[in-house]
Length: 113
Image 1 (cartoon, rainbow, N blue to C red):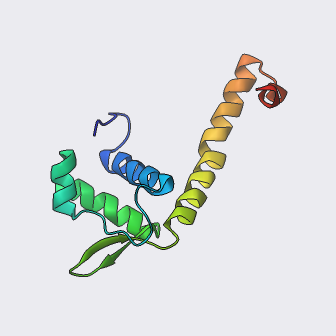
Image 2: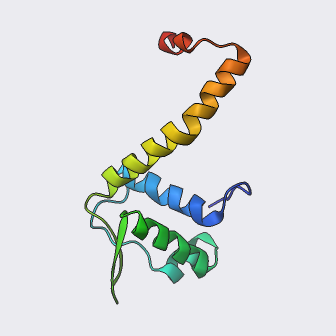
């Protein structure tokens, strides 16, 4: 896995796991690799992976079965979509609209594409 220096690694790992869940590559109920195993696979410190798993657990995407491992929640896909839509509407779209305004692009051109 290649990382972008402009975003924390644990968030990039989180994004990649969420993409795999949304694509169906990882299904609800699937067990994901252990913290150490995943860290070794992608070449990062296990503490970084643990931070990712904690974030996804807090978001309701993963859950932990003590002594067994981390699993994908039954409603993980819906939770990811909710989080991503909120992020898009609150962070990305306003920046796009500002940029369009600065460039003199009328939003109606989006319907033509």
